[in-house]
Length: 615
Image (cartoon, rainbow, N blue to C red; front, side, top):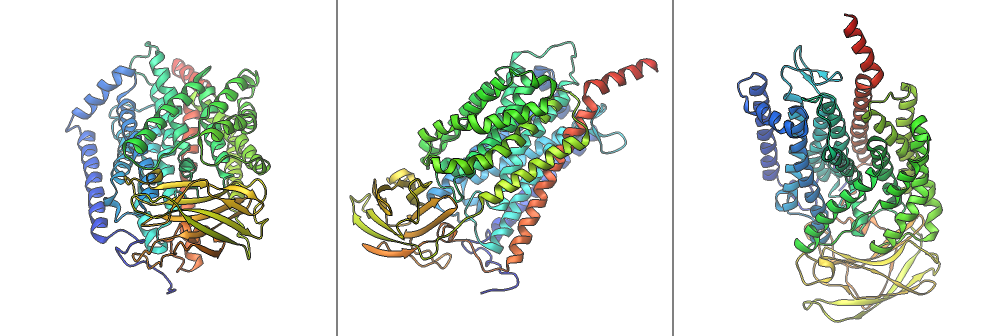
């Protein structure tokens, strides 16, 4: 049925959440918001003192004002909670499929609590300052109320992420469930959390120059904490890669190295410029340990599909070596751009050794020309942005507005162009596969099969494709089955167009098994076995002993819950709204950084001190 607004029936599977869950979540959000505003009102009117007392006592440990210490303490707890929930949620969807509702997924509670407290952490920084103006960059809210820029930005990106929840439900009602991490509203949820680390770094900088005890120098532990913040930024910028971490990416493999370069150049160049020698290696080690703990919790302990993650050590070594150049002192933005260039080439090659060893999909040699064409421009842009952020965090004067704005705009355009190229996909016409299945040893009484596959035409993929594989997923977490609900078999090439299994694949129960091929721009799939899915009105596809099926666009078999029964302009308009919100967040962070730089840079501070003396 095609209608002006094709809305999935309320509470139906594959659409939005049931109305009772929507009401419960909305009511809970309003209750939390009311509690935050009540505490803020009582604090601002001086009817309670415990909030300021707790913040100031916490600030004494790190010699930071309370409006920095308490929000950052809350933030650390909440961002780790959200990260665990996020990785667990992706794993649950891979292993079990869609939820009965947002409240039926335990990982969603971690995500929602984490994002709520991310917003609360920002609001704490906004409401805590009473009699003092929290630094020269502070934003005036009322005649006597000023808020730190970092706190306002933290609350803003937290709100941006939270808005993703109701928008996601609306999105599902309009377009069905886009069961991919890269759904537009999903990117709002994870993007807000990832970018919040920039706001935290800015807030900490504001507090560092407004210390309760100016004569007390920061010790090594505070330096280490600041390095960990950059490690957190590296993790935050890596969330876009998580489908690749599980080996279930629904987009071309060339995106993975590009995203690795984006995350590493921005975070590690800024880290090295701000904190000096060895800081990038420490940041990478911290990120590795955090992601490692989360991977162990989600995989072996929660008994869900395993995930791996980038190492980033090669890029860290490259950035450390590039910092030996005198260019870092004379022209930091040029140094950052050059570091990004080397990181996107030499650093990426070093990272490929780690990818070869631990990831499901290696980077074939045939992919490198396009990979470098995408990674090098974004690496240069990411390195330049990282240097600009480092200059802000060191209190140095930024380039003139036209230059810094040009760098930010160019970075956005370069990332957009690389993304547009990565999204280009070709589905082969009149291509098919003849598959002969042979029964293997059953698992828990369920049918397991091996496959002998002949592609037609034989040259539909070349000699060095990104992958030719059988992907099996959603077989149920906790079951005695391969990969805890996920199994991937990289097929062995016998001759051109002829591939065979290296291990058995499930063809029973709730499992979904598809043949996937990816070679350059070619990205296609065909079903081997799909179960009946009455919840979305989808008929099953049997795993016959021998069959020939045509290749189709991957999205039609990987995202069965998605609905295409809507006018094309509606999807474009909805995506544009999400894009505008994202660009506003990028603008706000850029504006905040520039405001802080103008207020805190050394030449402006010296001039203000001279004016004060003259008075």
